[in-house]
Image 1: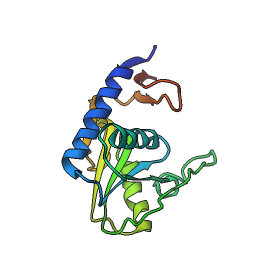
Image 2 (image 1 turned 90 degrees about the vertical axis):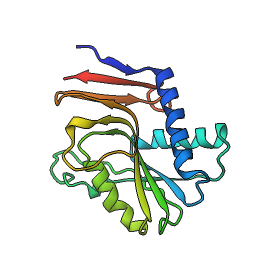
Image 3 (image 1 turned 120 degrees about the vertical axis):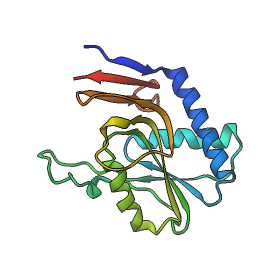
Length: 179
């Protein structure tokens, strides 16, 4: 079965601007707020949001970091294939800052749980929020909900949501794939 397009490029752009506006409403000046893209796929969304906030909404000096959660996952030893870790890049103080985790798809919540553990290595944030492009709301294994969501998708277990970014795959599009 061919993949179904959930969001095309124009719809992704509209959602990104809406998410940026929601962040501005809540955080206004971003002096105590840090964006953290969860490696690997949340980085594209985080970079795009930072670009929109700085270039189109003239929000100055937004701190952006990348967090690798590979070895904080509860299932990292349960695979036969070798794991490839990504690079964590957090070059600022997290202590007493508001951290916004950014990821492309919220599925079971396990990645976010891992991110909560991993960020503690960099200090204790005063607050942590979650922003996702796609929220698969009926698939959660943990009681984790996003503070900001682009779109809610009701996908069943044999369906997969795939986000493609023009920086990586050449186009901005979100697919629903049935396996």
